[in-house]
Amino acid sequence: MKYAEESRRGNLTAVTEFIFLGLANHHELEVPLFFIYLLIYTVTLMGNIIIIIIIMDPALYTPMYFFLQVLSFLEICYTSVTVPKMLVNFLSADRSISYMGCLAQMYFLLLHGISECFLLAAMAYDRYMAICNPLRYRIIMNRKVCLSLTVLSWFSGNVVTLIQTAGVFTMPFCGSNQINYFFCDIPPLIKLSCIDIALYEMQLFTAAILVISIPFSLILVSYIFIISTILKMTTAEGRHKAFSTCSSHLIVVKYYGSSSLIYLRPNSINLRDSNKMPYLIYTTITPTLNPFIYSLRNKEMIGSLRRLLRDRMKRKIFSHRK
View: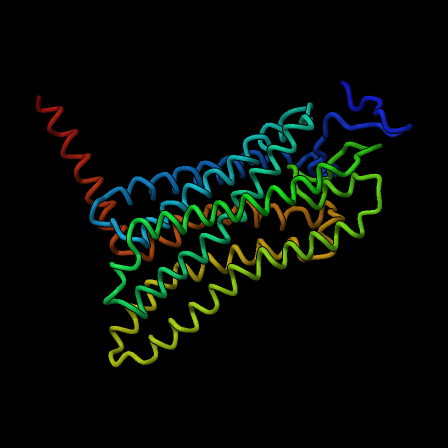
């Protein structure tokens, strides 16, 4: 197996592929983890695909459900970037990934993750308009505005991702090519650089602060106005209905906020087997929760799912009678 080739720059060696260590000291856990994460990945795919199908119901054609559909699509992409390769590595002796494959994996991981942060801000703005400006909501949050906010989320995520990915992969990697993690991510990758990474760690921390603070500041401001409006409502039923439309979004924001904090922890660079699992849980299990958080708390989606299943049963019965 070829690990490195001679570089034109002095005596350094340029890495051409990386090796994932995974749980280097606990290989006995890898087969159980394969089945656990296979189940998690299956539930993630099925749950988010079902949400996308349910929201195709014309009765759910509103901005809130449009953004939820985009969020489900992003989560399918986010998990599909890393989990399939991770599952293969749990059972395979060859845990290598090419240099370009690692670059692509990290790029799409960051792209979908950061885009989700900005999309959550767009969803908070949608809830602000629905509750604080209900009479103008349909006019302001039209299809063009929803598409523009979605494109802006992707564009913002792409800009930040390109800068971060370029920053990592312009660093010289020499010596060890073993990534002390399950997939290509910034903290374990920059640990392999043969230059002083103190400056880049500071840049990473600053970028993480900006990526997290900008969308979550927008979310915070939106919910300050939302809560203020809800408290002014005269009926308990109105307050309950208004808050119920926001509670699912707030729960999702909480989970994504927790996973984003990984990049703000100084010890995220030095991952041991004992603290790899919490990071892995944040990045793989969080997308699984989205379908349950939104569908179980949403009577409209449950009603749409029942109609979908009822119509399918009727078609089956009708086809059998033929």
